[in-house]
Amino acid sequence: MKATEKPTGATQAEIELIHRKTLDLLEYAGIWVMSEKARDIFKKHGFRVDGETVYYTGRQVEDAIKTCPSEFRIRARNSKHDLLINKENVYYYPGSTCAFIRDFDGTIRTSSSDDVKNLFKLCQMIPEINCTSELVTSSADINPADTRLYNSLLALKMTDKVNTFSTAEPIELVALLYGKSKEQMREESHKGVTYMLSNISPKSPMTMISSHGELVITASEYGQPLIITPMAMAGLTAPCTLPGVIVQTNAEILATLVLSQLVNPGNPLFYAVISTIVNMKKLLPLGCCPETSIINRVGVQMADYYGLPTRADTSTLSNTMGFQAGAESAFSLVNSVRSGGNLIKGLGSFSGTNAGSFEKLVLDADLVSYMNRLLRPLEFTEETMAVDLIKRVAPHGNFLGEDHTLDHYMEEFCVPDVFLIESLQDWQAKGSRDVLELAHRKVNELIDNYVRPDMDRSVEKDLEKFCEEHYHSRR
Image 1 (spheres, rainbow, N blue to C red):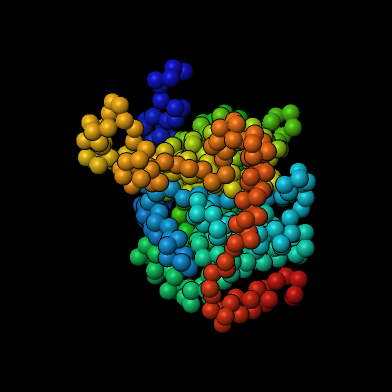
Image 2 (cartoon, one colour):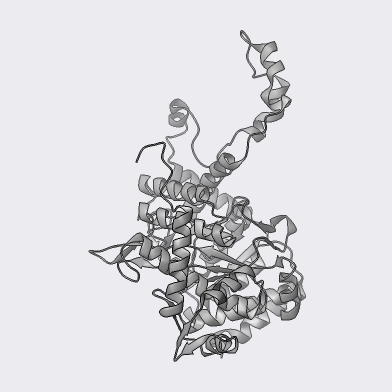
C-alpha cells in the first residue's frame, strides 16, 4: 500500500453491504437466546421465536436502531468527572478482570483485595483515567462468586469518577448511591442523563447467554448505558476471513441492541469491537495485531453509520514490560483513537489482557497525555502565531526570557509524567534509571498521596448492607 492511500477500512457501499448481510443473518439464522425472560420480551413484541432461537426482521432491527441516542451524559459523584458522550469526545479507562497481576520485581501472581484497593486509588489519582474498571480482581482472598460485587463496592467508595460494571447487582448499588428509583433513573435517561456503564459481551457465534440477557434487561430497565462488546475469534468462533468476522460481530451487537431498545426505547449504548484472530497452532486469541486494528476500524465505521458512540481498546500481547509492550500499546491506542473511538479501554493490561500492571497503568497514562496533545486542535490567532514577537526578536535574539514564552509554554508543551525526557549525561548522572523504575516510584507516590472522596456515612452503610445481603458466601 502506498503511503498516500487511506488506511484499510470499508467504502460506503461496503458498509451498506455489511448492513444488508447482517439483516440477512439475523432473519434467517437468528440468535440463540438462552434467557427465558429475554425470549418472553421478544415474543411480546412480535418477534419469531422457535425454541430458544430468536429471528429478527430487517424492519425490527432498523426501528430499534432509530431509537438509540447519539449523545448523552454520564454523571459522576464529582461533576468535574462527568462524561459527555458524543462522536467528538474521547475518554480512557483501565482494562478489566485480568487473571493475574505483575509486581515491579517481575512476579506474576493472582491479585487480592489489597490490589483492588490500590487500583482504585490510582484510578482516582491519575487524571488521564476518566472512569474506572476492574483491571485486577480480588479473587485471591475473596469468594470468587462475590468478587464483582465486592470490587463494585470499593469502586463506588474509593472513587468519585464514573464506574464500569459487568453484572446486574451493581446497578442497584448505584441507585442507592444516588438515591434514585428505577423509574427515576429510566426517566432521566430519556433526558440524556445516566450514572454508570455496564459491559455486556455477547458470546460468539450468535449467542446471548442467560446472564448477559439478564444484564441487558436490568441495565435497560434502569436506563443505564450498555457497552456491547462481542469478541469473535476468526477461525474459531467466527469465519477466518475478516469480512466474515465483521458481519458476524455486527449481527451480535445489533441483536443485543434490539433487546435493550425493546425494554427501554432510547436506552443509551456503545458499539464496541474487540473481535480478533487466533494463533491457529495454539488456538490463542491475538488481541493486538494488524487484523484487530482493521476489524476495529470497520466497526467504528459501522457505528458511525448507525449514529452510535463507540468503544475501542488498547492492548499488547507482550508478557513483559519491554519494547513490544510499549510499541503495541502505543500503536493500538493511536489506531483506536484515530479510528474514532469514544471510550478507550485497556490501560494497564498486557499479555493479551490476561495480566495487569500498575506500572504499566501509569506509563499508559503518559501515552494518553501524548494522545490528548495530538488531538488538541491548533488555534491560529494573532497571539499564537506571534508574528509581531518574531519580528521583534529575530534574527539575532532568542525567546527564552520573553513573557509570551512564560505565558504559553506550560499549556502548549506536552510534558510526560514518567517518560524520560533528559539528556544522556543527565540520565547517567541520576543513576541511569529505567522508566519502569520511575513508573514504580510514581505508583507508590500516587497511592501514598491518595485522598478518599467524601461520602455520606449513611449512604455508605446502605451500600455495605446491600452487599452483605447479596454476597453468595453469606447466604
